Image (cartoon, rainbow, N blue to C red; front, top):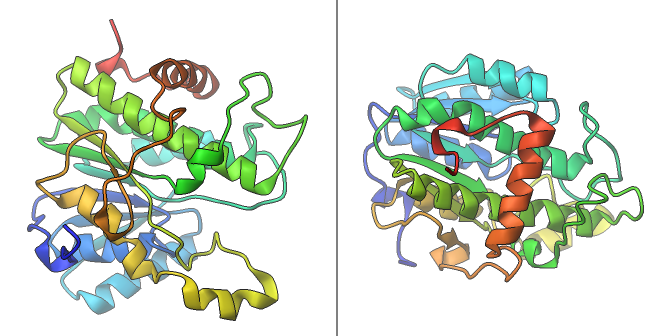
Length: 289
């Protein structure tokens, strides 16, 4: 498995992929390789200018690429709904965008920023796109998590973290939520016998905008993976015929074991219910009966 490269990806002609945060970090090489292999790629980015720049970069590398930009702000549920309404079809959703190590702030809807963007925004987006995903054979949802999930803890009585906030602990909490969501989505898809695979990835310590190391950045960057290398788990999870729903793909394409909390079906079900209440998005097609 470790010898796999993007050259091993199958052709994706006739498939539509959405990559959130595809304007930078691992999102851009993820979108680029999907386009290189024939997929129509929707670059979902908060900034119109950066989204357009990403599309231009993809077309420079792949002149025949079918790439387009659509605005998406995961920290604003109205933006998430508007984006989803504008999507005509989708076979592959890569929930890649994320924020990390930020001072405490709230989204437009009043959620703690990292939890609201990394988890709730993607939860809502996936749910709103679910009917379109299920209309396509072999649909996949790939959600980027992190090994930081193992340090995350969920306090349902303080989801806005008013009683205590740490940048890293808040990030870990959002990444734990990403994994809980991934695994619960797979369980619900299986119960509903839906043709959908839900897979999580961990890119490794990668040189992206999330990594902020101040004056030491040039030195520390020497030890970070390139965005192209960090994108490999997402590309493998998105396209390999060998992947199974519910797997967690890490650096060097090794299958990782989520933490005990991430594997808790009770915790996942509670988070799902709370996320549904907070976002107003219900996954009707795979609702547990």
